[in-house]
Length: 273
Image (cartoon, rainbow, N blue to C red; front, side, top):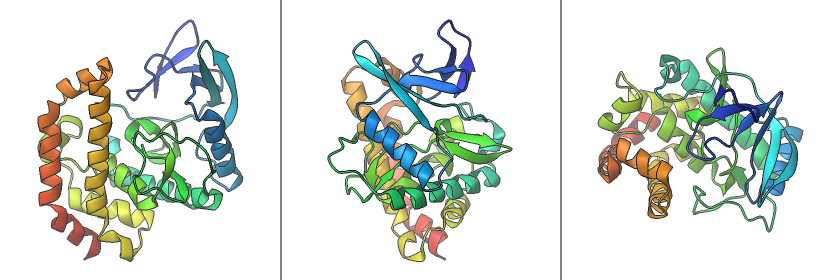
């Protein structure tokens, strides 16, 4: 997130949720807490206990009218926001995201899941899983230092799922798995999708047995993201209504869907050859 001054602390900007409601106060970030905040904070502490220190450490929860707020440690570094700087598309940055996600999954697998927690389903894996995934490893949620991914932030959409599905979500943003017209709006220069998809899979250490399945899971993840946007548009959310209009409407989503399906075999070959 980027920052700006304010009477309530230093406002942090980035992403589409909680706009104007996230503040840095010294070495803490104060932000709206999701309904499952106690369980999420417990999960973040458990990740740290299992060696994953590349996420904010929970400090506490406080009441703010009808909604609670959470305090977490501030992580120093750079977060890329659109229009994205050139370093976002370097192979160094891409490979470091893959390695960071693997570290998260290794720790999360050791932690496991907690029974009877109402994890958010907005971007959750429909297949479920025995470990908690981040589900939103987009540029807005990765902190970089010296051009390499150093930490993940904003775990509000975390939920049980499959590691492969979490990797697919990350691929959507970091490869990116976008048709050329859509990609040009955010990532000028026409990235080599096949080469970058292979780099992400290699840096993550994706087993050979799972590589052929990744393109199809990316398609599934894209449909989940489309549904996420559709629900917010149907609810009249002004942020998502504006974003949909600015980014080409539903025609863009239709174009992405067709492009992913038509290139599935090409992406599979790039991952498995």
